[in-house]
Image 1 (tube, rainbow, N blue to C red):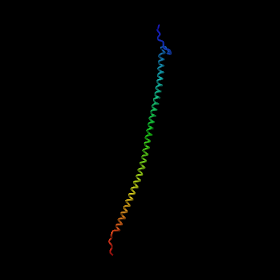
Image 2: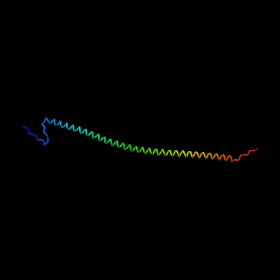
Image 3: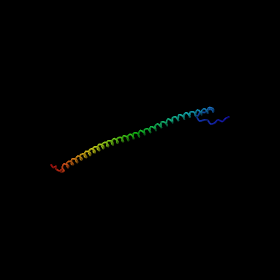
Image 4: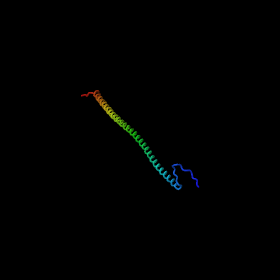
Length: 129
């Protein structure tokens, strides 16, 4: 007669030895399916994380783009201001040049008048008749 082994705890099914291999295969297959599901879920979570991370990168790029746009706007304003100043300076320089030329012309005319006046005032020998 064979000596029976310890009895299984309550709630655990016992199976004949030939069914035990099939049961183990079924459990392994179930574990494998669960593992595939878990891996798919993990891949989905990783892709969501990468998407969120890329969204943060995109937000950072937009923030940087706004910063550089503001810099460009400031540079444009500064360039317009400098253009206005240079235009005013050019006009002023042209007016000063015209004024100097006018003054030089007036001085030259004054010298000619004085020269003519001195010429008329110089003694001229009288003509003998």
